[in-house]
Length: 586
Image (cartoon, rainbow, N blue to C red):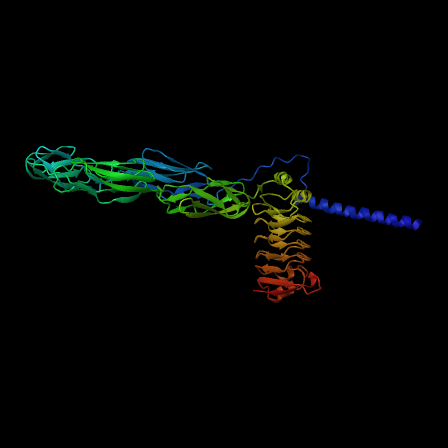
């Protein structure tokens, strides 16, 4: 009975000792300069969402543009930086009566004048301008019917045909070279005076373009027998025009006055000079009729829609998860009749797109947004890169508050976070208490060392990037971080302490930077998955512990004369990682 009591007493004392040692380890870690507990029952400050990538500027591909009335020009904006989170823009014109601008940056010239087109970012109200000068459309030519016949005392109004029909200044002057035979008024009405021949000339105010009509005046009338048109049918696109030429028979008929009519002015109109202008899709009959004898001729006009020849999008853009951007499709030609489009995302789980081109980032990844025109099935694509916005914290307390709000990631997909800290105090306790998988980027931090046991047994730490300010990694710093698969050690580090990464079972590779001059005992021992080690510098044999790595890595390294390069390790079948054999690759 006494023996049992002694045995139970021994077990009880041993249990107390073990528990006490474990508690000491925990307290030692918390008290370490690299990771002290940070005390207190104060509630951490509320979590503030991380800042997105801010727009710093915007520019346009053109600072000035000259357009003719009716012309268009697409302006292309460039946001800086290119990966800014909010790339939404607004466009305005300082003078819509001169030029307008669409939501996608397409400038349309309305009337002669000047307008400043401004693009403004939704983020930061950054602006860029383009000065648009709209010039009137110049006259390129003028024409008249080549000849006409009148009886003495008769009149006819000549109609000048100015090209292009949308020329701004259509003013003309008239002149007769023989007023004794025929005179002409300011509006082109010719009056026959006496038998003979004269030439009536019209001249444009813009460009001094001229055209002539030979007028033959006779004493008795020659009757019209018939009239014909140069075409019996024609096809036009919406917005285009065509002149129809009427021929009277006989050519010397005295009264050559004509009237023109369209049976469907909503499809196409016709001027007094036979200029047919297509208005909208449809059909109409253009009829010319002689004043003498009511002779007629007709032309069937089919008005077609203007087909789409192409469509374009900005080639690429970047968004953070949750961000949005409206893509604008530029259709060619700008006056295409049917500008309807459809949008599709190649991967809606990464980004969706609405019927109006609004892209919404859903998850990190890449996706192609494609726009297709309803007319002609023309397509264009924009490659969208969606990045998960990495939360950035400047205190352990705010990081802790954020981490508490996150769901438990049992699938082991870590929460990627950046910590810009001046001290690691309290971080280990936060990581272990959360029991959530985390990847840490400490590159923005300013502390100078990773202290002893700083991340001791943080089994849910999957990767870490160490700050350039760090010069030493202390003993047991990452001991038994069994979830650690990746570590980035900066060139600033000069020493790696004993057992610093001991028992990091899933660490597969590591680069020892050129600044490291000392690697302690068991620094990477029992890292059973570590099969690639790259040395960027030379380490003295006296500062390279015998069992810093599993197997014969140290001896192979020293045998290579402190050989800089990558070493690959393999474990013989049936043996432990302590028997790993290393080979220098380069």
